Image (cartoon, rainbow over all chains, first blue to last red; front, side, top):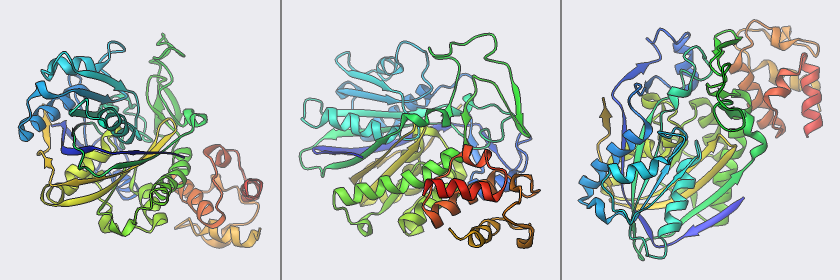
Length: 350
Length: 76
């Protein structure tokens, strides 16, 4: 397990935007056994991006509203990090496009990071590391995906689980900020557990990529769709999720009883509750946005804090732990304190 | 490893299938109640009770409960 401690950087605000269009697993004709899915996964509603909305569009909207609410001038932003698995184009990087669309300075540092379930933790550590010595004073961490677009609508093992969202986290250099603390892990031998096989350089998009194949009852998909081995991912999650949080707490000697919010990647309720119980955390400290938004890939951790803890984050000092685990396989946990930050209303994009 | 105990813990993951329907030779994936959710509950049970991480392939390559016990023993 790798550890990192980053001083001098403070989170100043959070915001999220989702597509206005939402689907209800209980009434969606494409979802069979909706009640069973709701009971086991905890997922009822998912916000689904129509063709014309991308992850960068939602992050742009979230960032613009957050900058307004913080009263920050876009020209003051020194660095932008965009975490995503669903970029606008194969090239150029979407972060460069966002620099222009957000009206950021041409002096701005902009970079994409291609990470999923663990992406918020990796993104936060990257931007905080860039900002810690004070050359960059203000930064934007944008984290989001339109992961629903990668799912086959005729695959019951993925389609009912995923929703779309884009988030923005505003950060500022501040020598009085308490240090952020991180633990990380990576296991590429599990790359096949969650994968889109075709469309990259290993298996370029070809005439067979769109061929939908019946795999099992209720499971048909092509090689350009998202594949998820539910059993492998579950087995991985219930072991690495708790290990990741435990190692963070132990290495940095953090008292778990002093933590206000444990924001876990929202995979599914059955897996997340196993993780919570293994760590012996009170249910009141573990917010869930799963019922409203489903699994929104890299966006789940900030989206859960925004949707379930807005008042607490705005009014008071909060000690937070975020933990992401999944595609890669990759996992990480972060400890970060917040003090009366700005939390914008959730935006709905048409 | 106590086989009787494993079979009992295995059977507890099912709601409708009676415990006396389970034996060491039960082809568990052919049971009517077997589905992906029961599979996850079995994985969680093995993790909790035996501290062993079984994969999707371990489950898919096992036919009987005896096969699964062999997997758990080999990974202990």
